[in-house]
Amino acid sequence: MTEDAEDRVVLVDPDGNRIGECDKMEAHLEGKRHLAFSIFLFDCTGRWLLQRRAEDKYHSGGLWSNTCCSHPCPGEKLPDAAARRLKQEMGIECRISEAFVFTYRAELDGGLVEHETDHVFTGRFDGEPVPNPLEVSDWKWV
Image (cartoon, rainbow, N blue to C red; front, side, top):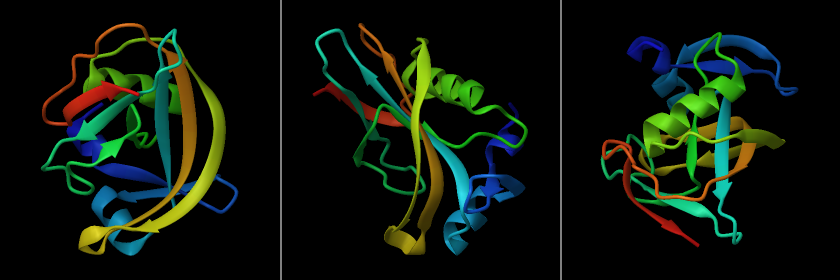
């Protein structure tokens, strides 16, 4: 994926159907509903792998979050996008599968709004991640 493609998000209607695309920052400033995914990895003992977002992320910097979350690029399949970002953010390659989908809207600091139809993927990983410091400042099993 090109850097330009990663700066765009896929807009969706209330039923989750793709209806267009726009700049990622525009979507977050205007609260446009867009497609996203979240990944929850667990180890063989049931512990959940969390990441702490890098301090200089455009929103929620320094906050603890799920294993990985992001947006598919326009034209990209969700499972491919999730696997790509898991590798980019956490240095992890493992099998993941979609567990459920939900839509939410949350107002964030800085006038940003998350309005996402979020596809949640789960998987098992027994090891230590090798996170990208531009994306992740820390990680832990809980």
